[in-house]
Image (cartoon, rainbow, N blue to C red):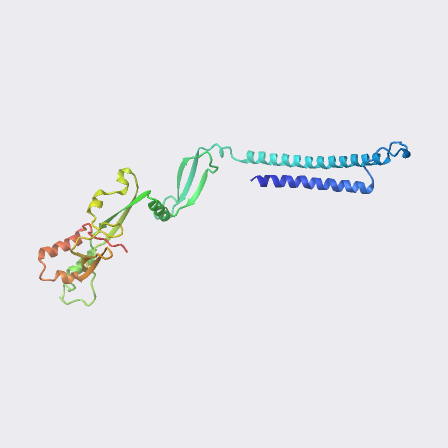
Length: 298
């Protein structure tokens, strides 16, 4: 900063000027220095006053020259010290600091990406001309970065839900319908239902012309809502999560979907109004790992 460079230099010169004036005052008090030669002149001629004024003027100019010389000497000495200090720093700095062509950034792994072998992942890029650093180590909040990129329209998030089927023990307990196979007595404790295990897999892709910037003509023409804040209506029918049977409903006032509980899955499968093939189709879909029709994330 210019102020940081100017103020110490100016302060050094003023300190030297003040010391020089103190020395001059001490010499005047002792009566030494600035001894003017006394010229012989006739006092009656009236030239004494002019001679005295001229002597005082010469004395004042000599004092000012000494003060200016002290200021210039101090400032020159300060400039030499600053220059030598800069040369020493330049000599101590590594030679490759200014000539490096690349910058290296180390990202500290938080363990979420499965990078347990390496604690730090290094990246390199070409060094800009205006940049002054070569190596950096950073901690990154990946969730915040992804959200910022998504809000700015740089990336898209694609979700896929995988039905991994039923737990073997849960399905075996559900097939017995709560009846012990050995003695035929009903169990008092509640058995787990046939709720499948659904896992979500997300993938982040950069938005580009290859994906039409996340624009889908099919979605535009097949969505009957007609407004971005209204949800696309779920196909009417019955749905189950393995324990309860739901009926899809749609609230037109708010443009929201909903699921209305109808009955327990065990009671639904025991109903005589439902054919055996339809019952087995439902069980096979839960057990076989088919892709879910509707997923509600909590």
